[in-house]
Amino acid sequence: LYVLTEYIVRGIQAGSIYGLLALPMSLLFATAGTIDFAVGAYALLAAAVATIVAGPLGIAMGIASAITAAAAMGVIFLVLTRTGTKDHIVFALASFGLAVAIASFILWQFGTQAFVRASFSQFWSLGGIRISPQGVINLGLGALVTLLLYLLLYWSDLGRMMRAAAVNPSGAELAGIPVARIKFGTYLAGGMLGGLAGIMILYSAGLDFTASLSLTLSGFGAAIIFGIASPLRCLLGGIAMGVAEALAAGYTSGMVTAMVPFLFVLIVLSLSNIGGGAMAGDRP
Amino acid sequence: MRGFTSRPNTMIVLGLAIASVALAARDPVWTDTWVIVGVYVLIALSTGISYGQAGILSMSQGAFAAVGGYAAAVSTLRFRLPPGVDLLIAAALPALLAYGLARLVTRLSPLATALATLALGSVVEIALRNMDSITGG
Image (cartoon, rainbow over all chains, first blue to last red; front, side, top):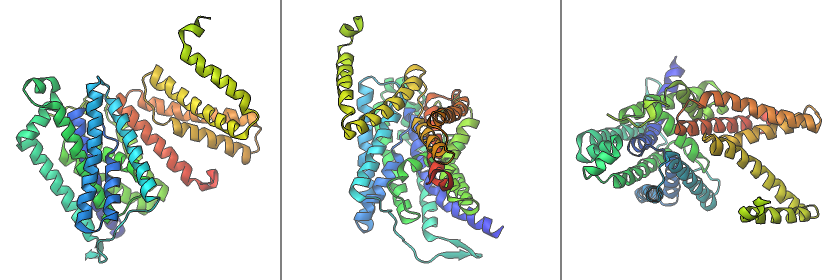
């Protein structure tokens, strides 16, 4: 039981990162009805840039480069929309292409090195359970960002416009809400959140150029497990996935651990009625 | 003969392809290129059938191809089966996997289908990479 508790604590600390990756999935799905497969790639790009530039400047530049990449995706989205694309899968495929391009760029520029930076050498001990200070920072940041996003969505004018654009795009357009710009902004927010998650991974478990797809699917899995609708559920979903992964790492082989995010997505998709309203982008 | 006039581009590509096949037999580089072309054509065909004809975007075609490739290699190298038999196994095993997947995804929305097949493709890839005793890593 003692070991179990340690795994769960470790999972909760790691899970906040997945929660952070789940937020852009939830946001973009709600406002644009599509998936940005490149969120994991933004995280990878941010971590890579923060590796070559030292200190707080590196963190800022990492997140800035992630936002720039997300802006590229936003422009692709706008161009596709202007040329009359209606099918949401096309946007998802375009972002998939961008994700592969970013991962290839990282491989080309940085090689196969792992991006990892140790921030704390000491671990805290709480009743004999090891707690990493970075994990606590991650959890705190994840909760803070989730709370800010919740407030933004439900207590601000911008949030109300975003929800309006999600529920009824043409009605929102008629009411003078710049729906296309809001969707573009959602892509940018996805870049920022993805970049922040990438920095957090850089300072905890680390990642390499192959991580982008698995990060995207981890975020997506975390977003759908308790329903894709609300930011709070994203954080909880991320924590659930982190715990599942930590337990798999503790009790099974590395193969199963690597599979956890994908199995998560498969099981949740097959159990839930996602063909119905659950994934149709309904946000009250 | 209407095909010749109504589809000029297809005919040009086809003509070039036939001409280069003659070259392919002489030069190993060309042979190799044509093998890769054939592989990509088959994978494109499988995507064409599922997405183009049936509207189901499956992101796990590469995983099916990998399963078939490993099945053929393992049955030849380990079980010493004749080439014709391992071709059958290489086609049957991914088809079986695809049947299970199809039962799962056909009732999902298009986006969810793409995600579920992508997740399955990644699971297959991880499994193949990790089953060292069977696949050689």
